[in-house]
Amino acid sequence: MTDIKIEGLSFSYGDVPVFHDLDLEMDKPELICILGPNGVGKTTFVKCINKLLTPTQGTVLIDGKNVRDSSLLELAQIMAYVPNTAYSVFSMSVAEAVLMGRHPHAGWTTSENDMRIVDKAIETMELEELSDRDIRELSAGQLQRVMIARGLAQQPKILILDEPTSNLDVRHQMDVMHFLKKYARDSGTMVLMVCHDLNITAAYADRIIMMANGGVFADGGAAEVLTEYNIKQVYDVECRVIEVEGRPHIILLPKSTED
Image (cartoon, rainbow, N blue to C red; front, side, top):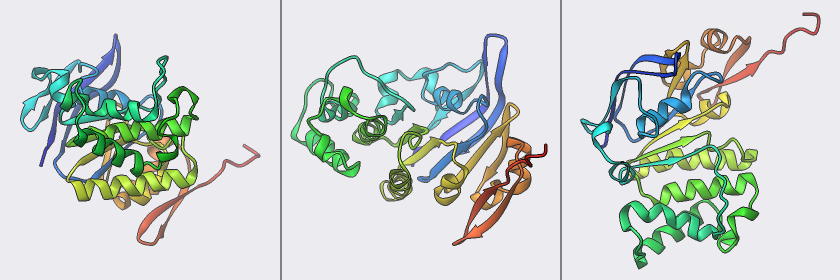
């Protein structure tokens, strides 16, 4: 099993610190969700893991090897990244966009096995009817599913997604989260995703890392992390947390209209 070890990780944009001295270890094929308010550094953190950003200090180790010592191609052979939004000025079909996920393994040659993997990813994300459609003609939600399919086609040991459900309707949000949880378990893949929706996270995450104030505020299972106290401290909102089918469910309390 591939593992990630974070040691003393810090990042700043110029003189503005984002987070500092993060120490984390992830070593299971499970769905790990990263929560926290806007600006806390969730996306920056995952981009430090896959070398899209260089941390100010500290190390990211994948199977004991510092990512600084690996090329982007080497990392792409074990790690896939699905961004929050993706726009293209190039004309290509959905199938061609998903096929790009095979590039780290196949280069510019395409085998029958590559096409089988692509077809499976397209089927998994329910994109068969859009397979020949130009990606520039897709809705934001459809394009998001294409990007997830491309990540699946990469067959990574670590799948990183930045808010993969943000452009999806409720049904597809639940379908994607259910799939990612099952995919992590069945394929032995670590799935690491940035999230915003507390209840979607509570319903599906195996582990939650809650970030705040430049560090990790809480880390653990949904019941441990998503407490009324933690949500108040991190998000500055009042809520009630109830149990629904063994998982926490958050009820946000609106501010009084008299305030």
